[in-house]
Length: 199
Ligand SMILES: [Cu+2]
Image 1 (cartoon, protein in one colour):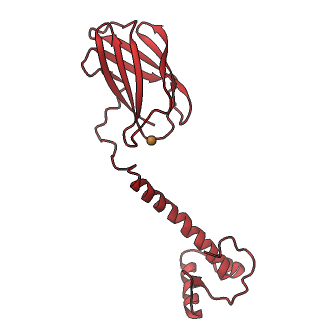
Image 2: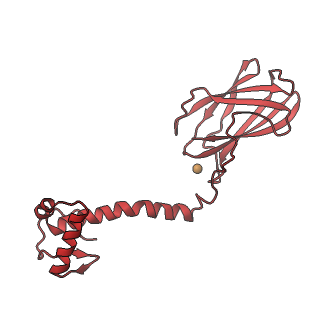
Image 3: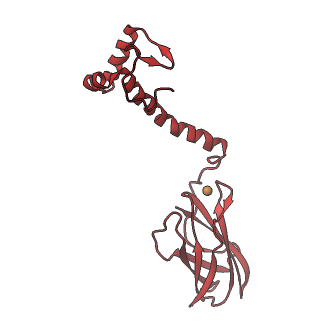
């Protein structure tokens, strides 16, 4: 595409070139007519000339092509190999897998921003709804569609009392479906839970 960026007058005769093929004057006229038909004014066309207009078209073609190229590479990378399930449970308060605990998590600032380090709180109660004051809580996670984990290593940094804990060091570096995996080792035993979060 040798014409990209050309702004000066074209030394060649006023004949449109498309795809590297020189068109006849009649084809060029038909081409101009079609350009007008899609909303490019005759004035613009006359002032800038065929080559300049063609440059714009080529750029536009490139811009149109970019999303296709991206989807093609995304497909080949398997990014869309798994869709987000329709029935994905997005509740942030749930029972652990073996129902030993109920866990509630929430970002401290509800507007979680992409790429920003932030904190969450975690509320922990036992089967009978009593706050669990002391537990070892391990945090991991990742994006199931992309096969990668969390970009940081969040951890419980404070016990806030009444079964509440502060998790610091959370960060989501991509938009999409994230899993937050917790393993709770507390007075009722060890249990796990996976929360889903869509950023
Ligand atoms: Cu990802």
